Length: 316
Ligand code: NAP
Image 1 (cartoon, rainbow, N blue to C red):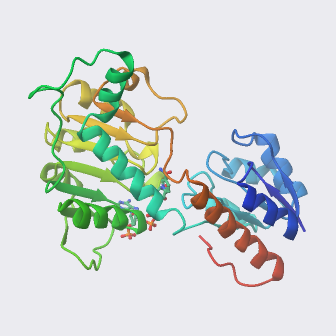
Image 2: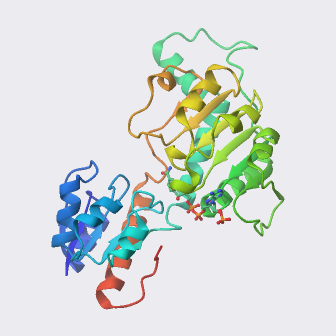
């Protein structure tokens, strides 16, 4: 059984993969090209792909009888894989849920606090040597503790964010998702996204990407939000209509945004780079050694189960 791992991994994951499998590691940190994906499907039994590796319907169509029978995705989000086309080609898909939850929720809070309290702007001022000292009206931001937060997508990460907001910051939690959740602390279900946007100080996105959620946050939702509100996106860039977001920020329809992901990642529009009221992170959601090792081990657990003929632990 030949395994292809599509990116360099942490030392722990690399060592385990080398010890347990006949593995080839791709050294490139950029997404796989179409030719690399065709080779992966043709020459390997299992592939561990990740974000940006576009296993589309067209790619599967070019390899009608793939040798590869499992894409053990590294990451919980798998919107870069056409799961229906994979299934039709006889290729199973797994992901790494749970391993990413707390780290991604932490990054949501990082973005919320940084944007509300103007941390990025302040840091740039200090580094530029333009800070002239404390005074009572210097760089006033948005108070966070006790405010109203709206979570869009109340799944694993959404609930971990809500927990931090409620227990850590005494915030009132409102949420939207496809279904109402049983939550063990106060959290109000607001099924209408426009209404949710209008009712909160901070709107945090934690839905999966893909066709169903593309541009879920559009001009109408942004218009419904309060001019003092902030939008935080740790989900996928395509969930937000980026042009509409830029227009809303320019028009003062919302007060700021904190972004970990971008519609055309890694391209970030100049308009956003020019705005001081926007915090921009380079997709850092799960970027810690422990979490990336947990994700890698989870992907390899799926590989091992497949090779042993056991049920896959995390099918999607
Ligand atoms: P999850 O447990 O499956 O939760 C997803 C939530 O989104 C569910 O509550 C689901 O609602 C809701 N949802 C799905 N489609 C929706 C729609 N059309 N409208 C409204 N709500 C919808 O997934 P998770 O583990 O929390 O991960 C969520 C996403 O975060 C991932 O798919 C990934 O794209 C992203 N992520 C980003 C980073 C990063 O580095 N920034 C890291 C990890 C994950 P129901 O429960 O009602 O079905």
